[in-house]
Every structure is written in C-alpha cells, then in structure tokens.
Length: 266
Length: 214
Image (cartoon, rainbow over all chains, first blue to last red):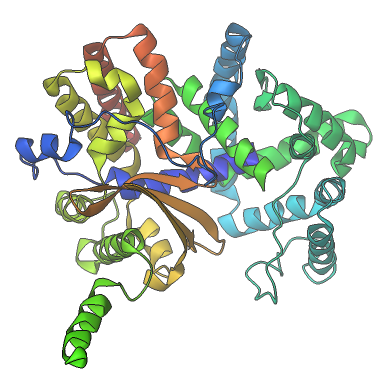
C-alpha cells in the first residue's frame, strides 16, 4: 500500500505531462479526426504489456483477476475511504502542522530500515542473493551511521554495479514462485489486496519487528503511528487518483493489481 | 566514377540515420526537453497553481508529441467503433479537461522548485522497441532523489511518432482509464459516459472552491 501510493503520485506527476496536453482550443476539429485515422483502421492491439513483454493471449492482468466478492470489497473500500477522509487525514494534517517535513522523513526512514527482515528473507526466498546482500549492507550502514535508521545514508550513492532492491515482500515471493493472485480482496484499514497478497501479509506480519512489542496495544500504537507518519507525507495523492476516476473503486483496483504485477515480475 | 556516386549516397545515408536512438526516442526526447523548458520557465512562476498563460504554453508543447485522441480511443477500446464522430470528439475533449483539472493543480512554485534539479540530463533513454507502427521507449527519470523507471508507448501516424501512454512502475495511464471506462460503459451509453465525466469536472471545481475558502 505504501509503495502503491508513492507510485500513484509518480503516475500523477507523469500524467501531468499528459494531462496538461492538448489544448482543444488550439486544435481545428478536422485535424483531430484525421489524426485518429478512424475509418482506415480500428486496431486497438498493443504490442507490449506494461512490463514491456510481448502481449500474451491471457490478456490484461486486471481481466485475469476475479472480483467475485465485489460487494464485500466495495463495502470495505467505502469504509476505508470514509476512515481516511474523516479520521486519518485530519489527524495527519494536525500532525504535519506540528512536526515539519524533515523529521517526518527521518521517522519514515527509521520504519523502512526496521522492515529489513521482511526484505531480507524474501530476497533469499526468491534466490536474489545479491539483493539480500545489498539490503544487509544498507541496513548496517543506516543503523550504525544513519543514527539507528533515521537517516538514509545509502540513498543516491554511486554504485559500482546496479543491484536491484525492490522492497520485496512475501506476496511477491509467492508470485515469483508461480502463485496466482486469486480473488481481489479489500481489507479494512489495510486496503486493496488479493488472496495471494493476503497470505503474504500474514507471513510478513511475523517478520515485522513492531509485531513483537508487548503489550499488543503498544504494538498497534507503533504501527498506527507509522501509518500516520506515512500518510502525513502523502496527503493529496489518494485524492488525486480518486478525483480523476469515474469509479474510484475500479481505478484503485486497477492501480493496485498493475503495480503488484510489475513488482512480482522484477 | 564510382566515387562520384558513392559519396552522395553515403551522405544520404548519414543524414537519414539519426545520430542517437531511433525515431521514437528522438521524438520523445525533443518533446520532453521542450516540455521541461516551458515547465521551468521562470516567467510563469506562481504560488497558486498554474496560470492560464502557462497552461496555454504547456498545451502548445505537449500537443506536439502526445496524442490524446489515441489515448482516449484505446481507453474506450472496441466500443469506440460504435461512437459517432461527435461523441468521439466530445469524449476526447472532456477527458483531456478532466486530466488537466485533476493534475494541473500540482503545478505550483513548490512543485517547480522540486523540478529544478530536473533537466534534460535527468532523463536517461535506455531501450527502444519498434513493432510495425507501435514503439516503446524505456527511460529512467530522476525526478527527486529517487530514480523511476518510466516507459512511453508511441504510435506512428503519417510519418510522425506520437506518445499515447505513460507507464510508471507498471502503472499505465491508459490501463487505469481503460478499466475505468470499460466498467462505466457496461452500464452507461457513450453520452452518459461523457456526462459523468463532465459531472466529475464540476465536482472537482466545487471541491477546489471549498479548499480555497478554508
């Protein structure tokens, strides 16, 4: 979900490149139609999918994933939407009014660094030994030089050789092993997921250090704070996606499934 | 005698082959460079979203390399063949306006300052694939401190390449709207689809007015 929102922003910014396009005032109606070449061919085929692979017969990822519990999903989608706008967003706005952006960035680095076990184990499970090694060196550097992970001292450093690190999680591992998404599922508070990614979330839960804080409500508080901090840095991103869509439920589902498919393929 | 023929021929070949990348990459590079120039033009600096003049200038540039009609046509898919010319035109128009309304407000001074470290050199053109009249160009953007894999899909029309889709980390602009439109068109007629897009724009305008009042 975290990355999803970040990527949505990116897409939003990119769409801006597209969105600012096309002043229709400047276009004569004739040219527009000529440009489509409507009648000469009605070809809608794509040569490649979003990953850059040649199109397969199975079609688009979103068409492959069933949404059988749609009314359940829509119910929780609306619940999460309301929760975000009425509770989380005002809280995050208040929080970011008090705490400036930079310290909030440090908090985020801290939590990202803390999630190292999840990334490490899932790199290993997918046989990505070099990535696992790089995650480890990042973790050590950020923990000991970056004040316990508050600073990200490795970001933007020159590398001798590119080793991809892509915040692996157990859902991606299952995908890499060949598991299908299963049904699309929306969970309260967690948001969009699939049957496969839900199993992944359970696996990652046990690798998340904050899970082991006692008592349970302290653990919950830490995780909620992490989420609050995260949202405070990204207010407006979900709003943009929602505004631009005819049916925000469909747009969020589409974005989630596409983003996950790309991550699994990496 | 042979030389006399060979030299002009060689010259023709040299001119025909672009120095760097293929035609799609060239088109994209020229387009993005121009777009960045206009985006960062200090004369349009503003605190409250984009000004009308800036918007007009941006449109002028983007329209040279981004094919909005193609994006809309593909987002609608096969149902497009049942649209009348008038419906097609109105849909493209209203869809463009929606994208402007949704994303344009991000264009303010703060956003542009973040873009300042971002210039033509921050875009790396990696790979280009061409198949018939379709092409895909992979790039790496360094918008902020993090690198992003961004791919562009292009289509060739009348000997010119046009961008019609932007893909950031697997999220495609076209793909998301394809899903959105497809699901809407299951329940709605083309005219209803256009009407609901118009309603969306009105909602955004109303929401924006509220935000300013606060």
